[in-house]
Length: 469
Image (cartoon, rainbow, N blue to C red):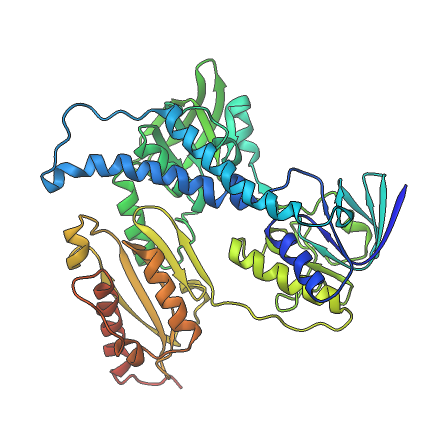
């Protein structure tokens, strides 16, 4: 067995792991990175980039469908070539993965260990029985994988997860999507716009990451105009049949439906890849998902020499957050036992549906009732949005009732990916609503809808209110 002694061992070569390794090296530490699977981040292989490629194709198809509304007519029948669609998705996906691999290949071979890691103790890692790594500190950055409810296993070999979608050679005729979260809504709507018959079924009533009931209802109304979405469906059974999969469920109107689909797509969340590491033998406090308790500011696990970052932490599963967490964890691991809180960004989440969804500052559910005011605007009659025939959705903005400091927003509407950034920057700089209204707003732009919401919020902040005893 080969033995290595290092300052920092990083388990996982995804976004967080690569950032942790680089941060540790930048601090002057001797570091190795351990990876058991194919190199290339979740984002590049099966997440952000291939899903946006599929969405881009769907937007092109949808633009043709919408053209008659502008008086523009296309002669003949629209044809979506599934093989061409998926061919481009895979080609471009592989290109993005290639960029990641180029970065990995620049890591010295002596710093890369191939194989599955398992803790012997808090300072020792066994890698598939061929290498033993002794490290002063360890960063766990093992990512996550799709979680599949037991009920869906009845679909047999027709059960797929989002990772599988991007391996398709062509588009199926029909898909039942379970889970109206970010992945389910994005892929479900994209497939529907490309001519696939889609239903989206969920449990619990959530729509994407939205917590504000007003914005949630507006998003559901808009997306449901194109495909059937039930965020709290009553599903009786999922059964593999000769032709595909049969799903029996009760619709919103109370009718019982039995429908067959080519595939069932489980978009029911992800679970951290921490099982199999041997964490249970290290005397750590683990949560229900098996993730060790850690400090979100330093990423340190308890008072140990272990750190955790990225999707493995089950904290904020977003690429930019994973990169930040990897940097913080790697830097602290290199300086251990001295650790410091790392700089974290203003929370920002974007869903690339149509209408797009954006959440700034942690959203409605993070606010303390009675301490804030909310301003709002509907995009149904917003000028530029109507011009573009994208007048769907709603925006709610929040501010501290006493100080007028802008706290965040939830939005479903046009250009949410861009407006969300503006609002995140404003929140990060602790701007007041009054100072935000002093900023320029051009005409005619979608951002004028934001100004309307801010004016509504400003008026409410200026209205005297009785202070509860």
